[in-house]
Image (cartoon, rainbow, N blue to C red; front, side, top):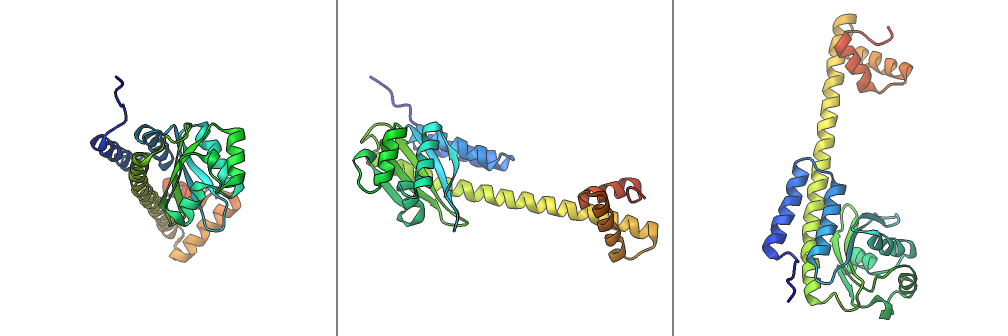
Amino acid sequence: MTVDARPGATELALQFADLSAFLTAGGTREEALRRLVALAVRAVPGATSAGVTAWPEGHRPRSLAASDDVATAADALQHSLGEGPCLEAAADAGLVRSPDLLADDRWPRLRAALADRTPVRGVVAVEVAREPERRALNVYSTEPGALDGTSVDVAVLVGAHARVLLAHAESADEALGLRRALGTSRRIGTAVGVLMHAHRVTADEAFRLLVRSSQLLNRRLHEVADDVARSGQLPGS
């Protein structure tokens, strides 16, 4: 008798919590998504590969993460051909399932390409987000019919957590960007204060001195500001 090694609901919840904690601790969105697709393969019955597709408005779809080369190839074929379950799920269908892609007439060009270039037979694609771009989780199987109703239920659950994970990651990215911007602003403000005192000029005049030095030296403004804060004078003066 074989024991099913796939995680149960409680273990899944714990692993999703671990992914959120990873982001909170400073982990990258890219690594979190790699861990998510690996978890999808472990969790979804019948799954052998998984990927996440992003489809920005007016642009070509792209891959955000893939568990292996098979998922990379299957996603890329759909992106390049402009047809397939992952694009339909991301666009408006929400959920698309094909138990056997080689017997599915909905995407004839994709069917031929998959048969020629990959071992993929089945897929469940789940919409993950619509803003700021459309996204879908794509779960693949190399066995026809292996992705059943239970597979769909678990894939939908993983997709829901992927939605939360991406929102969390983007909030963390925005917060990091804001912290960096505030830090840069403070450093420039410090340098402006130093120059105001040293040259007896106004804040606007001190800022113009910083900008001119940055342009002459072909250096970033915050780098020149750091030099001023350390030395008390404009670099090169």
